[in-house]
Length: 141
Image (cartoon, rainbow, N blue to C red):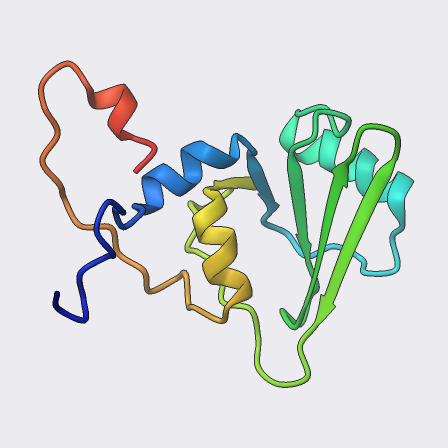
């Protein structure tokens, strides 16, 4: 067995499979947010910017003006959770957004890459084969 092959009976997961498995939508507020905001102000901002219900269990990301801080707000069955990260060095590299956009939908795999220090502004998705009639299903990957 080669070093790059998975163990017998196992398949390497694709990013699309990981994204579908989570079932969570991730929303990035494009404009910088005041990092002093707490649960309620971030929930109101999530609703205003995305038009989505902050009680939905989706993840709402807010970045600092300097790009070195990130807050993630989500509803967990019976209350809000807030995850806050401050980088000691460097900046989060967010994906490119269209001019005038207020929010950007990210895949869970893109969130993982962002948190791991991958520059999402330089990530380029290459064209892949898609069987006819499956365009909608293939957009997740």
